[in-house]
Length: 275
Image (tube, rainbow, N blue to C red; front, side):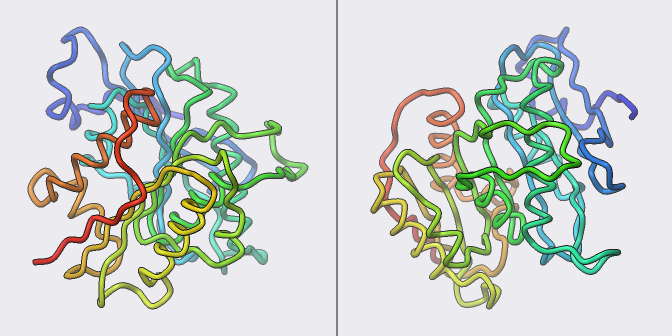
């Protein structure tokens, strides 16, 4: 492991105490496979800070923790959150791997952070699960999984993961996953593109999970961007140059609600964005 000062994000968080240090610890091992590693970004002034997992996509066959870019780190850290970006094993690389093996790897990373949160000034009881495309499936799988059956090689095997909220960017949501939703589950915020959305992640999946969340009395909000395609969040939410202010404001309200227990914004609606 190596520890470095992640200087590039200082511009995002200049309002913090100038004595604070912004750190990145790279390639922390959470499991036995070479891809069972994650990066953690935190501030030395943080005490009991919420943890945000940013989980990459790539059709379960590609992608890496580099998905978590400066805009994402800057947004979450400016809201007082520690940021974690994991790798996981990929389908078609080496021995047979399923999409749920990818999800279980990432769950092991969450369990690691839950057990070691204090090292980073984090609160192990407040973990936000976020992801894009295939990472959206994984983040939802982690948020709405009920019965944990940990593999033998898992170092930490908690009875539950302390997920307080879920965010999906064009998440892949098959029916069996949507059917996992129950009363008392974490609130969900999710977005999809319009006609140019990927055929494996149509906006219909967003409407389906919204219906399941509503049915079970779970707070939710959907964003539908008619003029954009797959995984619009980096442009419509995270980038200061191109973000949509209505979506950005709604997401900050969601973060305040789940991460800091402040307020309960209106939910159950769809923000529709047109050119």
